[in-house]
Image (cartoon, rainbow, N blue to C red):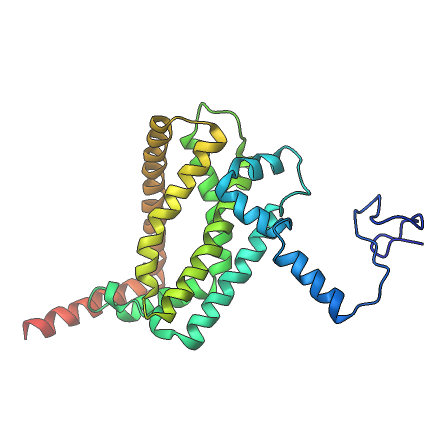
Length: 266
């Protein structure tokens, strides 16, 4: 008998492959064992996905440090977890666009005369959400590297793992919350304003656990992280404004604001 995944020769009593770890399947696929497999994969407490989701709240250092230190079987690896987060995020955008478009209306948060520009920005964010999610991670890891200077427990690559798990966990939760909120008529912008500080608190909680910091230490480092993040944000805004000037979007926005001001004076 050979493994159906890697074709290694197995003994007749083998339940798992000694090379790839794949489970030996002896029975034909039926509705019964298909249902058992789905239940075991998604609803059993002992499965990797649910265990990863729960333990990233209970003991995030166990999941993150475990992966960094070589524990690769107990939890979902960060790349796969991030892939799941991207899928869930894409699904929530599809659901909102098709069934709850009013939840994506950010006019209440937009200055008068900038509605068209805001629509373009939101369309860009929705179209390239997965790319933006990937871009955030190396930036956050770099900021964390600067913030936790003097703490040499994790290098830059290992901090990428930290933020892969953090970004994945928060994206999955926010996607579910946004859909539930949309069902009750709550705007996506409102949820974002509420959820953003919770994301930062969760990041602080993770770093407190993985660096084993005191409350005063994590508070100081969080403030430093926000300062560095603000500096990076200003730099990014300057770059975006420069691009907008080059493409002409900024000129359109200025003209729209001028027209709005003139109409209000008349």
